[in-house]
Length: 143
Image (cartoon, rainbow, N blue to C red; front, side):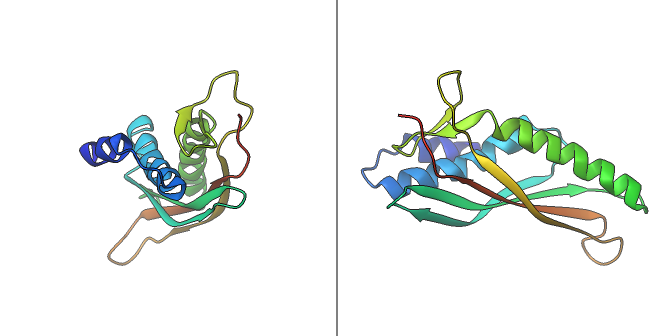
C-alpha cells in the first residue's frame, strides 16, 4: 500500500480533479499509519470532486474491533477512534492546486469531517467488527 501511495503522489498530472482524488486517497494511508493499532483498516469511498468550486469530498470508512458485550465498552472504542481520526484530520489541508499538505500556522483551512454513523454486531461472520463512517471534505483553500 505504501508503495502505491508513493507512486500516486509522484505522478504529476495537469488534471486538477485527478490531483485532488489522488491526494484524498493518500489521506487514508496517512490515517492508517499515524493512528493506533486498534484501527484495523481505513478506506475512502464515494469520492466526489466539483471543479467549479472546487470541492473534494468522500466517505471515510474506519474499521476497528470491540469484543466486549456492552454499549459502554463500544462507546469507549468509538470515542478513542474518533479522537484519533479528528487529531490527524486537523493536521492536514488541501491546496487549491489539489495537493494535500501538512497544515502550518499559515493555513486557516483544514479537512472537515462529520460522523455519518457506525455499526457493530456481536454475531455473524464479522463478529465484533465496528465500522465507522464519516463524511470528509474541503471546499475552502488558502492561497
